[in-house]
Image (cartoon, rainbow, N blue to C red; front, side, top):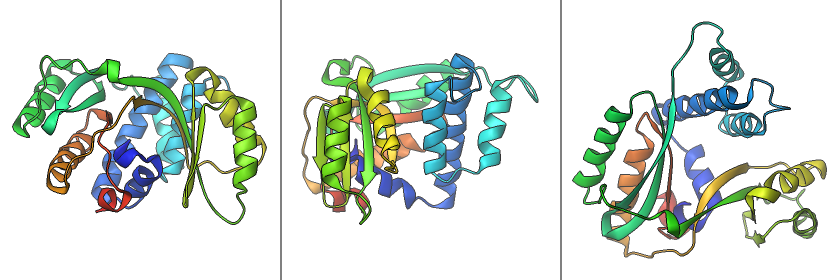
Length: 247
């Protein structure tokens, strides 16, 4: 997560310009379509779809866009795209390990584009083995407001099975195992807490700190990758202060 803070990443996404927002909506729509094809169009019976819809709503994706993605994946209005999920292990510049998750209808095109972008920026595409440095976790973020009692959040999440709870000045970030993620999410919602984000992600086991110029070079490549049509997520272990992430 950028800057070792999911909240910093959320704020950066919210400040994206219209062009980036359009690309974000495309990625979210594809995520919804894959979830529908995997588990059906009913979010009450398809937890992955529920999470995808929640992410789309958090990004202010229009309701009609969400409904259109579900309809396309359900076979209404055409067959839609045949999308394949792939995760590539790479080194970004200065040996920053990263995992790039893509949804693509053309594997050869995607891998060629990724190789060109990563190697041109000074990274390593072939031969990188970095998955061992990451683990699958659930991460839930609650923005701190006057209505949010951190003690109640802590107790609720802990009782539901959370692994770690980080109470910051602006947000509370809760980490869970994959197995307990759904129970923790539903417990927080049942207590009336509004979730800024709730997703299954890849967390690094350790973090790398770079000087300002080197960190900026890595972040520029991450943003370039995030803007590519087929890229859904870029997981990495670069740690930066929140103000530098925002910049």
